[in-house]
Amino acid sequence: MDRQTLRLALIPGDGVGPEVVAATVPVLEAALTVQGVALDLLELDWGGERFLRDGAAMPVDAADIVRGTDAVLFGAVGRPDVPDHELVWGLIIGLRQQLDLAVNIRPVRSFPGVPTQVRDTDGVDLLIVRENTEGEYVGAGGLAHAGTGADVGIEVAVHSRPVIERAAHHAFRLARQRSGRLALVTKSNAMRHGYPLWDRTVREVAEQYDDVELEVVLVDAMAARMIQSPRSLDVLLAGNLFGDILSDLAAVLAGGMGMAPSANIRPGGDVPGIFEPVHGSAPAIAGRGVANPAACLLSGALLLEDTGHAAAAAAVRDALAAALLDPAHHTPDLGGVATTADVSAAVLEEMENLR
Ligand code: NAI
Ligand code: MG
Image (cartoon, rainbow, N blue to C red; front, side, top):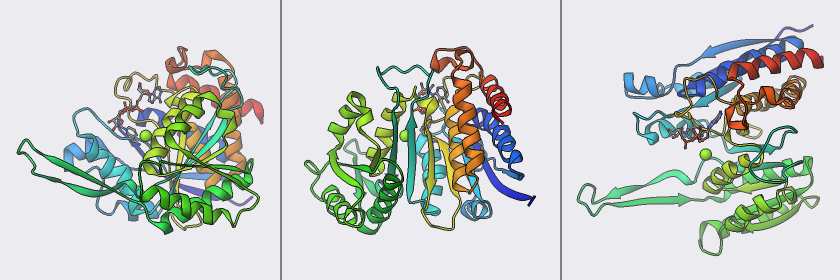
């Protein structure tokens, strides 16, 4: 058998990041070993501690370092003693932009046996495609009259047609592979420039996908619908801000932040993707070994799929689903008493059983 190798960069980061990454790596390694694939790990100490030491969360050549690998597994950044924007911008948003990772894919699926705070979530299976490089998070703007007591914060949202188009094409391709339904989320009644451009552009792209049914939904209505009838939804396409907010909402349908994975990728581009749980560093529970590793494990499965290891990806997902059927493998966020390490061990065991 060919001895293939997957070169994986690890950025565990801060808080629960290192805990969930440590629970995930052995699972990915086991799934790849079965397929005859070796894992070559590059562990990077980027994040809050490095920021406090060096004044920067990552080195200036960070994007080049990442380009030398096949994919990145990222935990989370954020610590109470560092302003959030230094780490979020100085690391994860910075990397997404430098690598031009055009879309953020956030699948949400309910798992049998996993309790949720929203009623009747069985069979929820939706996927948010979030534009990842501009919109409200483009970083344009400034502060005027700073420090005078009459400070003015100006945050400019940027929406450009080519960027909307590439996110839209990816969303239509995914919708085509799934149920054939796509909902575009905008707010064109109150915002008169950027979101109407989204509506027009996506409707034009839709003409190339006549097998996909497109609907355009205002973000506030979508928030209600996600709770009221989540099964009426399949693929959602949204800009940066709305995609971010709706994906936390969607995570609740699957059991909370501990269950929501994501992938930052450039479709068709020759650049490694960054795969990360949607959640942050969860400082309140960090250091206790009780973070739910499911979101990170599922991000690992997305990583395996994206790097061409679909069988290994399926093995991770199936083993996690099997482990979660038993409440003994639920961490406190799911109402259980399992530790992060217990869940990892249970997933490894199920992977062995399912072989
Ligand atoms: P958060 O996602 O860290 O926590 C939100 C809630 O979910 C908390 O109650 C937390 O305990 C819970 N939670 C999160 N992950 C969990 C897990 N794996 N298992 C069980 N429970 C979990 O979001 P928050 O509190 O808004 O932010 C905390 C820090 O993380 C901040 O510094 C923020 O800037 C940063 N952050 C970083 C992100 C990233 O690195 N991509 C994304 C979001 C926030
Ligand atoms: Mg978020």
